[in-house]
Figure 1 (cartoon, rainbow, N blue to C red):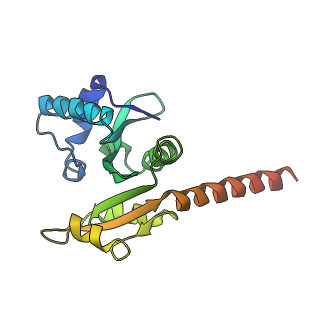
Figure 2 (figure 1 turned 90 degrees about the vertical axis):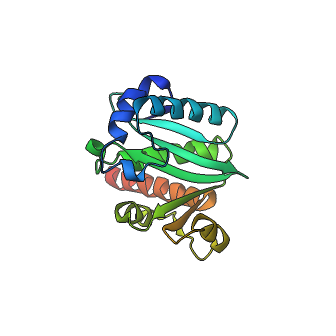
Figure 3 (figure 1 turned 120 degrees about the horizontal axis):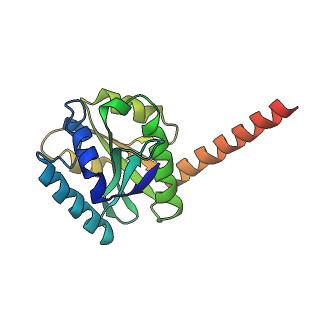
Length: 186
């Protein structure tokens, strides 16, 4: 489902990223394939320095379909950035990728907080974020960070995913699934 970034996936990812429904919402924009290769190489090097955590999202056949990243990693926190190619929208890949990524971030890499800045015009992403039971709308609770990401003008909403709230969600869902399977056996 997820793997570390690799230059070999660049062609497939570049083709998916340039779709007009995807490109405006990609943080690391590349206007040519060569630029995408350069950005991917920079991303791999930045991960080695501990500045970013970046993974390629794969479908069930191991084909690259998007990326998921934690940008600006500092003090056990960072900003989530994810995109999927247009043919893969609405098929559940985004949630699956986030679940795998959060497991790695929170339980293997020591991240405590994941922030999301979502453009106010990106209603699709806002609705998706607000559906998640472990996401906090943080425009008011993290006012200084909200102001920082909106220095020039207010274009982003700020969301927060704390490790403890995510863990509570995972524990509850695990217990619900276990109870459901016990009821079905009875």
